[in-house]
Image (cartoon, rainbow, N blue to C red; front, side, top):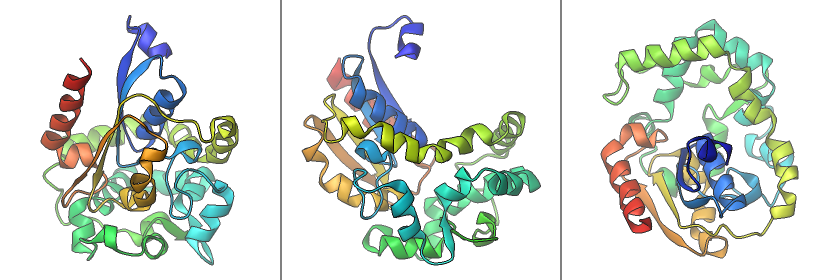
Length: 263
């Protein structure tokens, strides 16, 4: 709300991706008087859970419990690994540019298809979580389960990667990783809103090869229970997690289409 008012506006349509999507959904959910529309990329509306997970599409289960179950024996779910701060920060600082490059590549559509996950949405999601870099064996690094691309994909330019690296080196990773450290607190703080409907017109854009879209399949199927003014779900063929980078023209077309309807 503060950003909207600082820009001299009384209302806004909010669009987010990944953690930005969680912020966008929650802002529109809690303050429909300010946000007259919302678009979420990669992560469907997930209620107090913030991010839909297999077995907990709307935060039905505590993050502390569901994360352990998803990671499986002797492994740590990546959100808990990031939230522990020191190990993840140490891994990042060892090779910040390489770490960012490999994370961007690992969860792209090209990488997922190359790994045999072109039909990701039809595969057992828990198996994917446990086998991928989303679950880290205790004492290991997330990057141990990732591979560097032979060449950068067309949607990731060298100067973009250098800019991302420079900015994250400048700010450090305590801030970004602290989002993950606060997931349990957020789940507890949103308990009073559990079951409340999200009322502004809402749209979801996901990727056919996006792991978080796969986790959210139940939330996508049941969205009508919680979002009465749902505009629709759009799953982009062959697209991975970095939806607005991998498919900018399609994303822009969908977002602008919603904006025209709201005018």
